[in-house]
Image (cartoon, rainbow, N blue to C red; front, side):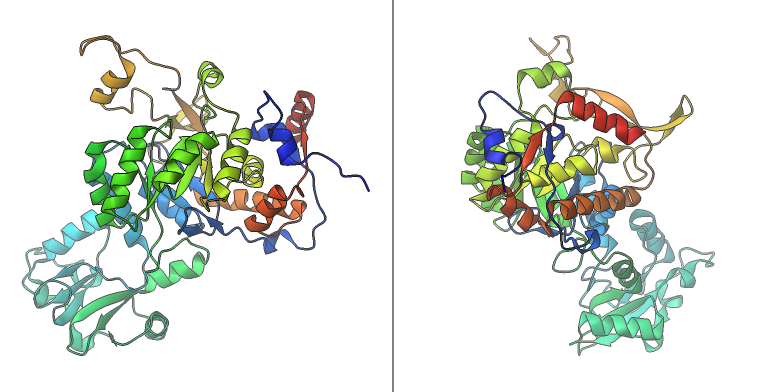
Length: 496
């Protein structure tokens, strides 16, 4: 039987031709399993694994804490943008890490002489109304009791001491070390309590377990979590020496991955910054980019990159003029970089051109491990910014990191002006903003995208990303190049 279609090597090594994600069709293969049996566990970096391939982009109209939480609950991860003060970015990371826990090692703790108004401040800042009380007001001190919203909601004098309103230790259910997380959760279920303090043999507070976290684990069993069962979160950093302080604050807040945010990877500045971060924080994973060629990728891999972002000139916010000058069609970029990086065990993130589940599936089929989404998630409820109505449509703002509305004044002058400090600021292509249609909650959107990807995997006859990439590099996956007419027919057919 003759072999139908072309293998990836034949297609992508043709001289002077480049292909976007929409230019190719993967031919189906026999399948012995159902879509719900597909496992979408993927490597995000060398050491961080996700349960979903979807990553939200580090843009100030896409990812802050609420988006990062939603993505992590659905198995992916969010990258907190860097267009804010380092302290604010660290606060966003902290919000994600505090959303869900196993053993809470740093709960909010006050002393018996603190006031109700102190609990009010904690609630206003962290949206938490349950506070542990110890004799010294810190973890590791003798546990005295607990204060919840029920204890203080109707206290008129907010300067009342907590010792006068707290539920004392004698009336509090608690666990004693050694105790496993499973045993702690079973105690909570049996007692119907909201919090379980964990004490050592000396009666000192060492941890807390929350019933709310138990409910979240039940509702989102595939959530991306670290070893302490906290949600995974990444944060963007511009690779320049002055940003090392930002890295320090992010690490202290508990960030899992740093993403170097630059339009072009493989520069000496990014390599130097990567080496500094790796020297200061050897256990911290760092994602570099953006790159579109193996030659760019080699420089970053040799310097210690834990993953690569691939994509240049393929964003929905780039003008046609810029795409035509520098860049590479996304399909070709993903294939060539992923094939090179695979030999070093370095995962690839397809960044750009992901406008739906079909584009995501093709990026994964061509070697990417995850896909980064900007415009696709910009119009969701969890994206930053307020919605507004125009021509009877509910819209939200979406803008690129290069727009003048985003960039600080000093960066505007450095990148968008010519001549001296007082020279006129001129906009360049790519620094654009637009409005996108409100898409509703991102959790529903991600659920739909995941179902679409699983469906495509089933049609390709694979049950996970590892098999998908083995078929790609073993020339088992076959492709057709889609003509403009075929693409138009498919597009109009999907709208019919």
